[in-house]
Length: 123
Image 1 (cartoon, helix red, strand yellow):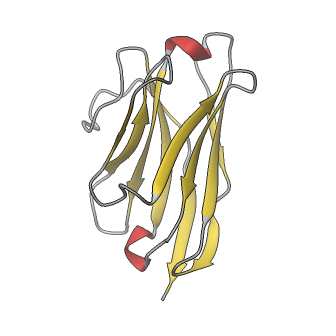
Image 2 (cartoon, helix red, strand yellow):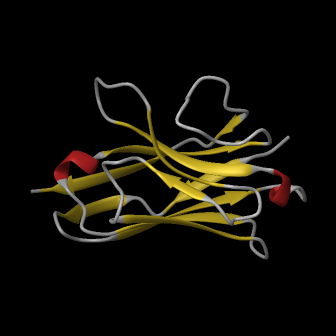
């Protein structure tokens, strides 16, 4: 069983930055691929970024490439999402995800989800 707790969301102006953190419980952090998804009001949950179990491979949605960076800290059992040059269209609830099989763009079947953290970007 893995518990994921997100933090770092908030209100920021367009062009600003935020850093989201997901803290994972348990001693098997390195066996899980990790990712971030987001869901805006009235829209489906969508993939944002993923990082492999080893941390050696990352993937990003086209909409955030060059602006967002995903990383993981094995000593702290955390995965971070650094978000720069934020746009109003980035406004959403951001969810952390963990899956031993890997995290891809597919939402269905993800093993574990966090409770989400709200990110609001004002114009």
